[in-house]
Image (cartoon, rainbow, N blue to C red; front, top):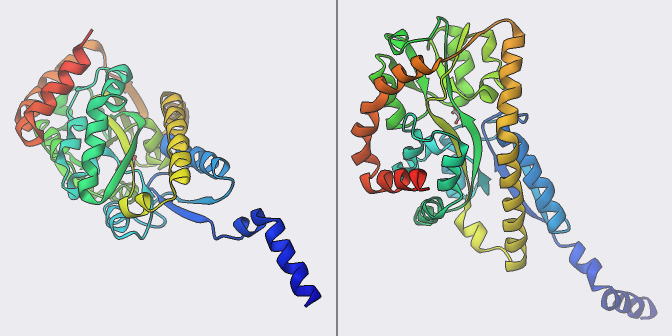
Length: 330
Ligand code: LMR
């Protein structure tokens, strides 16, 4: 009896300890790239911020490099609630039925990060994320990676240099049309399978920002890398809607704040990470790096101009027009 009253007094006297014993809320964050990439590092930053802001009531478990789910599977796993958070490339939302995200794939659409951020940090981007709720997911933020370059095992200086090559792409109709416009054969493939496919000669080349190219060791299987900046690669961080709306409101607010800070962090490191990777590609001595001259870039822009016209209606002409107006606004 005396022991029971002591224990009861204890439990009443320190409710905090009772709270600490609650099971933490676990966020399984799956992605397909290496950890030392803009997305990999931003995921770790979010983990740190989220766990700190919730005093450990939330634990974030990160699964990089497709170790838990590969491309496409991770979207299905998210909708089923088998993971809570993923950050797919904007080129991979087609299977979710939101093809308008392919607007980010239009060649030479964004002249620089400033133009891009007018969309991803502005009302158009927010509206695009909001529409994801209809698909059972909640869009939290856009994360940056960078502008893409072409690679192959021959020099790529003119658009015709891609003619006849089998080029790996993400599952986007715009990227499919882009490669066809250059006379190449597009081959859709999961990111985690690209290195092996290049090594085996199943595909001849691909396109990616330097950070993805270098962290997948593609310099070992590609002899030429052309800095074309012809398209943008970025991400949308999305969570399972049921999970997110089921969170206690104080936790959700803390996670939203952590996501805002992690998003700023991703934007602050993206260029630096890609510059560092480009230097590492050069230093490897395995891949020749060519930066397009202004004249060469003009030829690529001309060769790809028809793609944007062809794709506008499929993506949504109004959205394309709104984005162009926002980019060009003073
Ligand atoms: C790709 O498939 O090339 C990229 O989307 C991978 C990534 O997530 O950066």
